[in-house]
Length: 116
Image 1 (cartoon, rainbow, N blue to C red):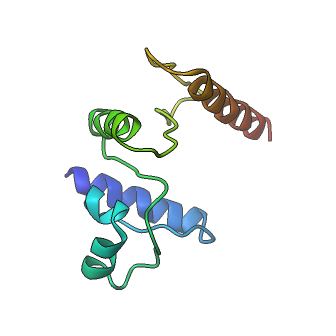
Image 2 (image 1 turned 90 degrees about the vertical axis):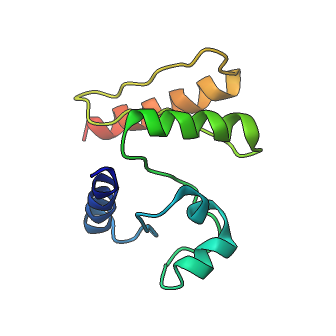
Image 3 (image 1 turned 120 degrees about the vertical axis):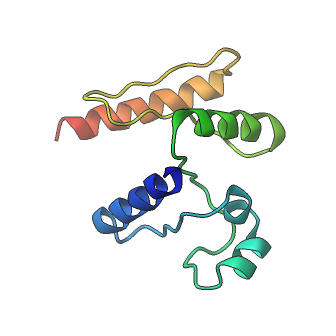
C-alpha cells in the first residue's frame, strides 16, 4: 500500500537519475541513523545519514518535516509539493527569513527548469 508508493518513487528516480545515490523504502530511523542503516541494510549504497526523505503522503511528510524542523539542528526545507503543472510552494506559519529564502531558491530553480 503506502510503502509501495515509496518503492515506486525510488525506482522512478533510479531510472531517471542513475547518478544519484538513492535507496528505499526503509523506516525513517534506518535512513537517518548510520549504524542502523549498516546493520539492517548492509547492501545499501548509502553511506552515513540520508539527506532527503520521501514520504508516501502529505500527512506523513508534514509530520516528519515538523519534527525534524523543531527537534534537530538539520536545515529543513519544505514542504515541497510535486505533481503540479507549475511550481507551488507554501510558506508555513512561523517560517523564518531563512526558510522563506530557501523555498524561494527552490521555486526559482523549478521555474527555470520549467522553461527548458
